[in-house]
Length: 284
Image (cartoon, rainbow, N blue to C red; front, side):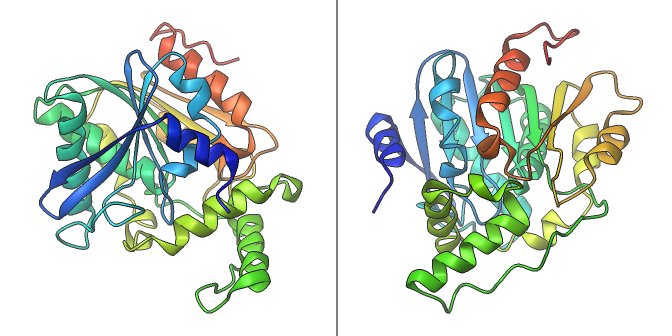
């Protein structure tokens, strides 16, 4: 059964299927105001942002996407990152218009995708990305901090599938197991089942810094304190040192899926960052 929050967001949304070379990409639009693009992680979908859309769309036009090869979107033309980013950038232009400046937030693999897309929009005169937020971003090439081994789930069903998904959420995504609720299980299971793009080779690579260097705008890194995909302290220092327009914050008592586990705190941080002064972001 679809959780009520997801059903309500689907009723609220304006859905758009926008053409690209591989078929169509599914976008959801919420709210009104300056455009804010939210990009999900690997094995994800637009629902990675389900607990944030209400707060963010109160002050922004929020565009959520199923990246090519995920959810309700068709696969990219080629199984590589460039082709996926091509599909994202092309269909984003179809939603907001070529030359329209946007803010962009990307989670996990979506952080790497967002960095590539922001660099490309800036270089190609597509309006650029005014502010870029990367939450638990992939592509840093740093040391991971595994909290256990994930379990295979494709051969499971029913209660066994739910148990394996709960285990995987605990070792990869959410620090406090009490926060693994029915909504998290639904989102993770539904999204994993429809993921058809193999993101790991790109997520485990180190292309993030090069893409950030191509774009000189304001960038914020957010990490859950207990993120297993990297060391937030070391990465915050590495990615911001010598770059005065880059900022980093670590969210206490949260894991990798930080915008879900600490939704209220992350929403406040994002809204302060997006609407605050560029030189003195309000990030208390």
